[in-house]
Image 1 (tube, rainbow, N blue to C red):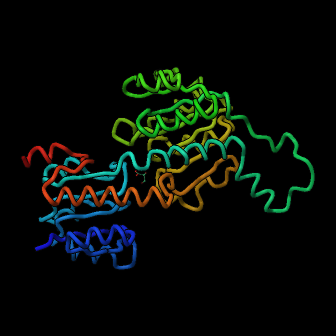
Image 2: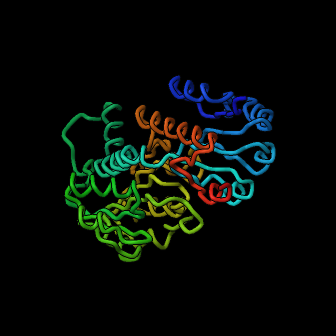
Image 3: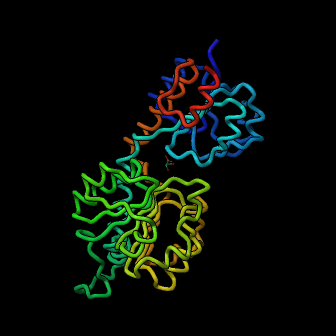
Amino acid sequence: MKKKVIHYKALSPAQTARLSAAFDLEYVDVKAPGGEARLRERLPEAQGLLGSSFTLSSELLDLAPRLEAIASVSVGFDSYDLPELARRGILLCNTPDVLTESVADAAFSLLLASARRTVELANWVRAGQWRAGLGEAHFGCDVHGKTLGLVGMGRIGQAIARRASLGFGMHVNYTARTSKPLANERYGARFLPLHELLPACDFLCVTVPLSDETYHLLGAYELAQLPAHAIVVNVSRGPVLDEAALIAALQAGRLRGAGLDVFEREPLASDSPLLRLPNVVATPHSGSATHETREAMARCAVDNLLDALAGKRPANLVNPEVWQARC
Ligand code: DGY
């Protein structure tokens, strides 16, 4: 008998076909009216789950006693309760690598858009206000040759460093748990403690994953260490930055601007003070949202689930200790 799999993220026909060939597959749109109730009804049979952007609380996991594996269509796994999954012997897989370059592109687009005021000026043109030449009030700032400080130098941090150094001739500094000799060598990157990195930044870009250690890593004190001409970019997770402190710094003119793809609460409320600041470029957690990358992420998640439910070690296991315990 085929194993029961529920996906709560819509998939392309190609990925749906791969799953249907191996499993008794069902799609539950958890965001639709009544969707969560339907998921609750189906969970008792589920041996595999695939999806993202939905929190599987321990109360929901209680309804799924047969659950063996979850394939998250994301690289981040901060929304999963790892001890709870370990206690229940449930494998968790993610989708690293396939989104690295797209997220780095998105980070750079936020950095460029904030520096060159692309959104603000494009809206100004659209509003019919371009009636004469530009004056200083419309100028942005250069990106090439400036100093980028990266908080986090994992895969995505290194892909941003490559763009910054080789594409824009920027100086790259970074803070991370350990020095990255390859990045130092290839991009002339300098490994610095946070308190030395911040005052040297023209641009600060956050790529470090959210964890207990990185929650509000950048608060009012840290933001005050940045020069007033600095631009902050966040493509990681909203709560790594203290959003209230960022808003206060921007409102007080203590920062030049911010390019943000992630927020403390998502979707961002339409009355967020961030949206009243012209020097903020806000995008809807869309770092990996390209046709190619979202399909690659789905394919990777399907690969992970096919392996996990066939008793093969999946390539992208977040909790290898659960696998070890099974062997
Ligand atoms: C990820 O994969 O974690 C991205 O942030 C998209 O959710």
